[in-house]
Amino acid sequence: MRTFLVLQYRVADDPKRALQLLDRMAREYNQPHMRGRLFIIYRWQALWLLAIGDLNQAEAYHRRQKDLQAQSRSWPNVEPYRSAWAAVIEETAAYILEYRGQHRAAEAGFPRPRQAAPRAPDTCQHLIADLEGPPFISRTVAQRRLDRRYS
Image (cartoon, rainbow, N blue to C red):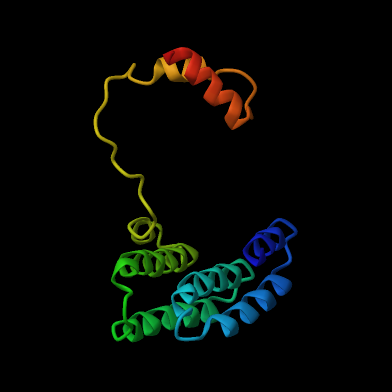
């Protein structure tokens, strides 16, 4: 719910309230069993600070991410999350580089689309054609259409 609220503050262009909420969330998540969530919170804080032009504070949150990453090496049962946390840190660095105008260097840190296995161009065309209609059809309607297609 609170993450949704942070996004709503973005739509409303209200960085002060978003940063207050993120600060509160960071304090709550700074507990042994919840610290992994801080990587994302720090990224959001850095992005909000960049949006209002506070590069120094944004860099401070990026440093906090790196410090947290170093601390996480001693945490139990976090191996599955390390690569995701590293990607979040890299993305934060990319936003900072972009803010500085270093676009080529920033490009390397942004997420890239995954390479899908090569497919024949018409592999899924019958599914797409079968589901054409209003842009937001219900899951039930979509399932019925697929069932009819394959029954």
